Length: 401
Ligand SMILES: Nc1nc2c(ncn2[C@@H]2O[C@H](COP(=O)(O)OP(=O)(O)O)[C@@H](O)[C@H]2O)c(=O)[nH]1
Ligand SMILES: [Mg+2]
Image 1 (cartoon, rainbow, N blue to C red):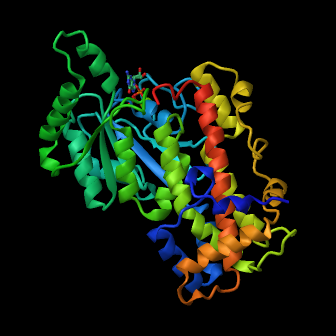
Image 2: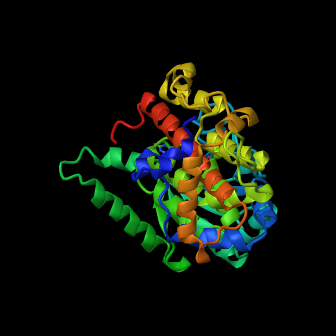
């Protein structure tokens, strides 16, 4: 049997090789000095982290549309928040993510009334439950937006200003003969900055909820990745919609960073595998990791149906693009057959690779298993990345690439 790991000996990453770098060395060294149970607990707890995002601003600013878009939904999809309507509720409405139930986006009542009081508004909204606030406007930021930002700072919570409906500004100005998109965007940015001087020097993100691939949505996500605690960042990145290559790559990078952690966590029962036998590891941990990738990449039926509606295609045609072993989902059976032991030659190669990074040339028990699990998880990630790329291509979302 020619095993998966034979490919480890080949020199190119695209051919399935994982090249070790300095970060890996640090992870590997940590992995062998920390009890595997700790890794397991860390990974398992990550999947139970809740993320609550509050979206607030004036009526008509585009709150509900943003609440939908960040969950990957269009305004007329099932489960979408009502848009273009006068707000009647005075309490926040919770909108769960369509495939990640631990993530909730909250549509808050408008803050445009003259008797608005930021402090009482925050306590009425039970601000403690939110991980961060998005304050949206489609025009200039008003006094109420500014007062709210100040009150949020006092409560030691994070907030981000969004200037919405940028596509409208572009459309309106694009008829002019001297139109220059970059100049228009910097002018809007400068206006917002001037407008928000009294809040310090906050960042403002220019966004169209109808097109997250353009303007500042990715910059907002980069900022959140830097500023949120690790566990919240994990929940956010997993839940983001995948409608572009950039979104897919962000998720891929995140999963790649988690692979050593998962490999050490799942090798808590590590035994050096014998040729012909399945790798001995905690299949619960491994299956959960691969399922997270599947779900987060939007390969589940529910996500494909939402995407199909968005691009006006038949969802089964999109599903047909998923050709990897995971096409029917990530089940324990699929994972176990995927983990059938690779050849001896491959194990020797891995052993060689690992002994380069482990001091004293002494491989602890289980090292090879960890290496194999790492390799296979990486391979699973790449397979699902290819599936997702094919789906996006079919949906004609990658034309500009
Ligand atoms: N062009 C454009 N229209 C938007 C955008 N966001 C919201 N809208 C429109 O603005 C109107 C008000 O949006 P809605 O989300 O209901 O605002 P809310 O009252 O703050 O919840 C609706 O007609 C939306 O379709 C956007 O990014 N671009
Ligand atoms: Mg609304």
